[in-house]
Amino acid sequence: MSRNGEKLLAVEDLTTGYRRKQVVFGVSLEVRAGEIVALLGHNGAGKTTTLKAIAGLLPAWSGRVSFDGEPVEHAPSAVRVRRGLALIPQERFVFADLTVAENLELGAFTVADPGQAAERREAVFALLPVLAERRRQLAGTLSGGEQRMLSLGMALMMRPRLLLLDEPSLGLSPLLVERIVETIQEIVRRERLTVLLVEQNVRHALAIATRVYVMRTGRLILEETGAAMAARGEWWDLF
Image 1: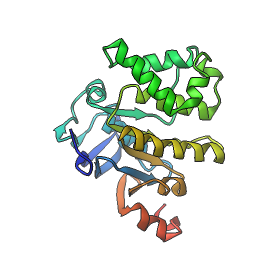
Image 2: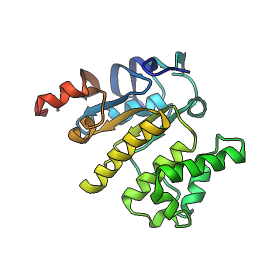
Image 3: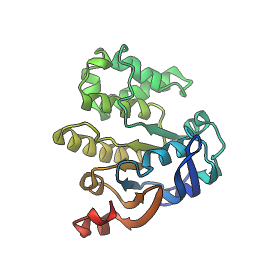
Image 4: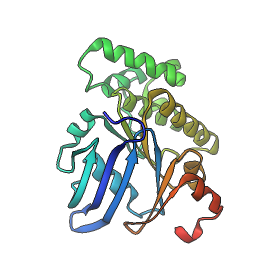
């Protein structure tokens, strides 16, 4: 297991796309244990496609994806999940006709011991109290922000080591976005997680990011620390 500061994810010269359309061109990036790394770029830059390839939802056409030193570019997504890599898509991925508690149970599908699953559920409730308050409520009746919290909770049930977050602020009010950002920081602190965050809201991403990659038309054009990126003040020339 990687210790804090050691390389957890390494992507080298990744290319991928959809059918015959190439979307990602030679992307190389790394994420070290304990970091929050932001992948920024305009809509359609290839950010989500990159995350899907890392998670195994899209095949890597070429290049390498290594997780904790082991190559996984040809491993099924289920194998990557069991190794500790979890993706939360930008869509509100919850089971609308099931309760909050039932959604969390489904999130623990990789946990064989029912006792451990119950412990994880209580830990998630402690971290995300809104889910404890609504544990018997149908997920489809939750607000957008609460559904995003439930998506986070479902991922945490698997006790991941690397969390891939795709546009967590999408469609939320500014107040809810602030809450999500604070929650991500708290999750990283309490759960000792590592995060690769895709986000279009530059200011919110820079509020928590250790390092930043900027993507344009399927290629990485910049790597900076979060502090150096924030010091720019304006980013229109990058997007």
